[in-house]
Length: 127
Picture 1 (cartoon, rainbow, N blue to C red):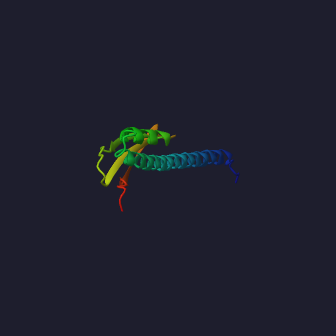
Picture 2: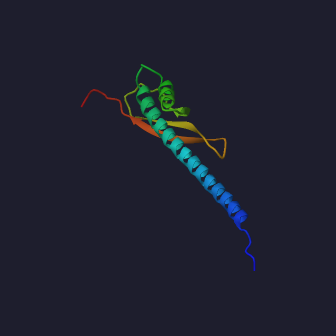
Picture 3: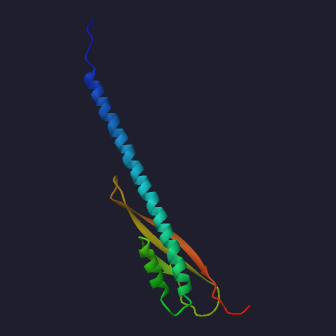
């Protein structure tokens, strides 16, 4: 009985294993890119809401401009801002949404959105 040469089968198996490991590695990179974009979008939304909330009361700047500037400073774009100007000394809530684009290997890109709210209580000067 003669032994057959199995060298070709091992090479094919090796290529398949390397391909599967490569796909797993790319999937891990894509997942980490999406998670990173999620963190960046949430940070940008939080910062934008915190910047816009006091601007609804002051005359110094527009709340929309403050939110946009803070979102862009954190690598995101402001999608929308519910931040009405109200000069009365009362509690107000600002809600914003920011977006970050994650560039991926398996797909072209994914846009990740995050919302945040901030409450502002103007100082009345008494008590």
